[in-house]
Image (cartoon, rainbow, N blue to C red):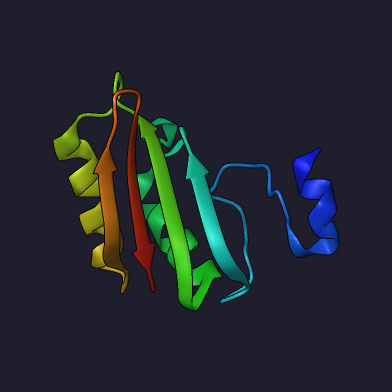
Length: 103
C-alpha cells in the first residue's frame, strides 16, 4: 500500500529477472530485497538489471545474513562492478547484509 502514494512512478515487475525482457535504461532505482540469492542464473540476471538501470541509477541489494555470507555478498557486488556499477555503501547488520551501487 505504501507504493500507491507514488502513483505511476513505481513499478513492480514480477517474473524471473534472468529471462524477462526489459527496456534499456528505464529504471532510476532497482531494489532487490532478500531475493538475489534465490536467482538461479545470476549472470543473466545481472546483465538484465545492468541493462535496465539508467546511467547514474542506483541498485540496492538486501540479503539475509542467515543465508548469504559476506563473501557471497561481495561476489554479488563484484559481479555488478564488472557491469559498470560502483559500490557506494556496504553494511552488515544482524539480520541483513546491504550494498548500494551506482551505475
